[in-house]
Length: 286
Image (cartoon, rainbow, N blue to C red; front, side):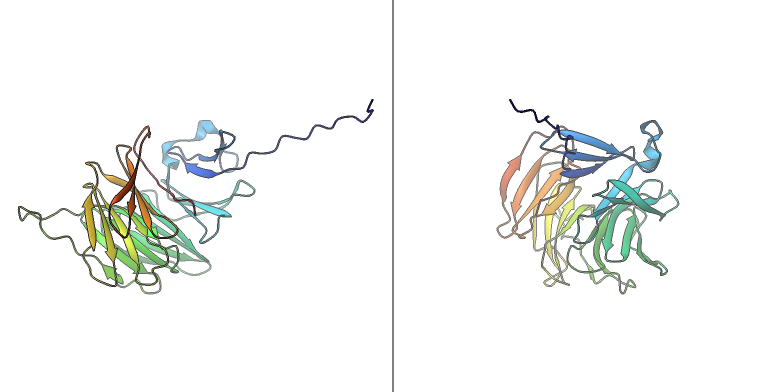
């Protein structure tokens, strides 16, 4: 008989596969394999203190790193979250709470924010912020995954623009609206989502989602109008992402439909079903 006592190891902490920002300001760490969701709150804050004034409106990773996550709150705060330690390490006040974040980016030592009133700001460490107006009724800002300080913006009656943080006096690219429809009526502009195609350089290729159920592809080296445009369903396009190899993009809508498109051929490759509500974000795992 073995007299050695059995030593029971402590249960391991489930690996967090994704982070989700809630409308009450709670950051949720989700472990898909363990089917566990963990709530993370800053400091001594409790769940009873969570409210919609702290809604997480935008999130982004540290540029080309998954060590730190930045979250933008409705009250104007941007918080830095350490994913390994699972604690909030810093925060800064970027707006007065009257504007809502529509996008965040972090390139090396510079935080990039954009609000729905069109205030695009670059916040270098230990330097004064650089601010410019990208147009009223801004719906989305997306930071380039490859080009430093490059972002794209757009919104309602606010065409797609590409900006370089080193010179914000004017956009480096500004799209033109598509031509009039078959009845010779102007097509309204409402950019609802954007995504950069990887490895397309300083003159990027971008995918644009339109609130009027259209997806478009822009090659900024070729022309100001889209090189490809098509309808998708009958609902607002709410989320976009491009695969790491740049061959496909995914589009989700406000009614919970999602499809994969071939960037080269322009057709739909797959449809995805089973969503309980509208698609608010799509991320393609690299």
